[in-house]
Length: 417
Image 1 (cartoon, rainbow, N blue to C red):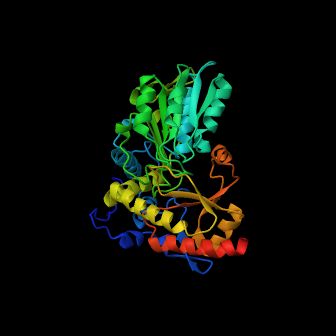
Image 2: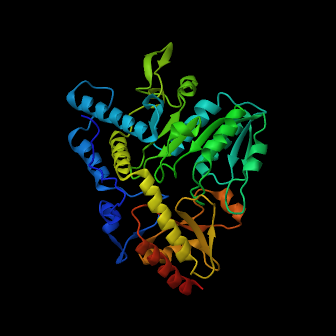
Image 3: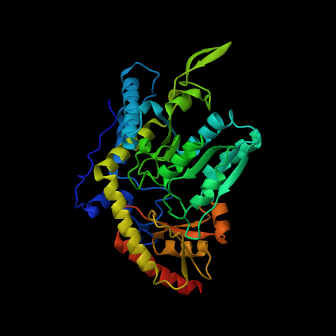
């Protein structure tokens, strides 16, 4: 059995976005008696029927463990799982033997922290992060720094929420061993110049780790062309199931790294006197993986590829422009992050209101936005706010939904002020 191949929509210059949207069952439901307006795709993306069907097909007809059994179901499961790896590798333009399948970006970044950084860093070494990082790209490096004696330096932002590149270059001094940064900010939507940053880091012999969680679902990503050393992504943000994702790493780096976890399937031979570990990527995939989930993730990648990632990016930029213009009509509304290159993520606050109160009242209107600190405490502290609301758009959203958000903001603002 190969990975289920959903029938993706035709990638044409005139895409029927209403037909695309119709393939997402959850978008048809109501909330509190109102049509659901789902504006929380940076938190988790919704799933097209093709992904749901792929998971159900495997679970109903082919469910077995992978790389363990020679019976028919075991062979089918293994073929489908490894087929999923191949599909995802093509989607990212990487070698399949450099792609570790795991539970998502958090696991992937911890894998690099504990398997690459922990054995190498020492007192006097430094790690550079940026002010806009998600906690998943901060806390693992803090833990490593505490255990190795390395220090952490922080690259700051411009008032618009862009990386201060001149400041970043000044931070890349000889003691820096690793630079970890987001491709796209989950709060500001800022798109960082990954190729330029990785090029400058490589000149200095600095290893680069890129958090691609908010990039891979929304724009074409050719990992091989970026020039980074590691790239992490999360499946549930790209229309796939939760508990899926991956880490791409350069083959020569993966080959030097010890296993992060020990167990079944990451070994070649085990004796009480010692163990011979498997080659990458299997070395880093101990235990039974999320088989159905990654088959579903491969179906999501194939489906997105069918729509066309360039078309998806263009659609979301259109929606972002519509939202930016419409939100200017809301008195007292402040948008955080106005970078020149920005994804369709809008974090905002309204003077005199609390983000949680605002989001709760929006929910009563059927509108789902996220409120809080978005796993980015240092960033919000830098802006001097305790919380924001975040409306994060996807290609399956509509101009009418954005207008509904703006109308609801006018309404709930009157209730709160």
